[in-house]
Image 1: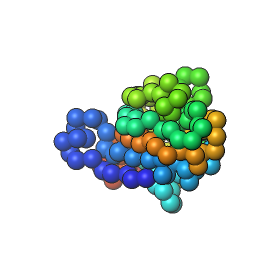
Image 2: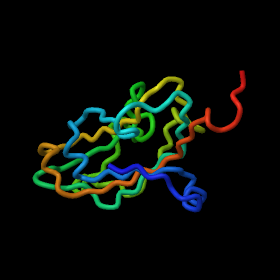
Image 3: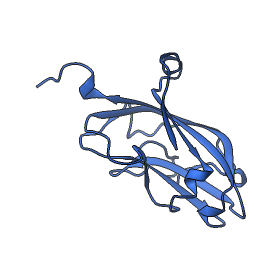
Image 4: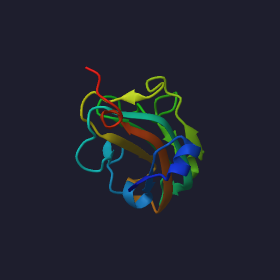
Length: 159
């Protein structure tokens, strides 16, 4: 996994500050259906982190072995699908054999104009595989874009 801070120009164009890239090599280390911290990969985000404008681009659909489906959710310790989900609550399909979604922008009402963490937490990904073990994957690359702002670092704290 790679979390990259976008250039000022890219950030201005996309409305996102960061890009998280997740490949099949990363996903095969996850446990299917279980939340795995991805931002940050270790430790926690500070209280006051605001997350908004979450969307993804599936560069290469996931595939491999006899896998037939792979859904993706992005959330945290309080809500496993707070940031990326589908309206059915089952995750967004990112597998070649499962009518993959190449472009997705979250419209989940729980993040509305942004979600602010009031306590330290991680942003977690859940990949749930169908048809075979998650370790059977041999292809796939997903780019998640999001705006991350540490509110305490921007302006005076109002007491």
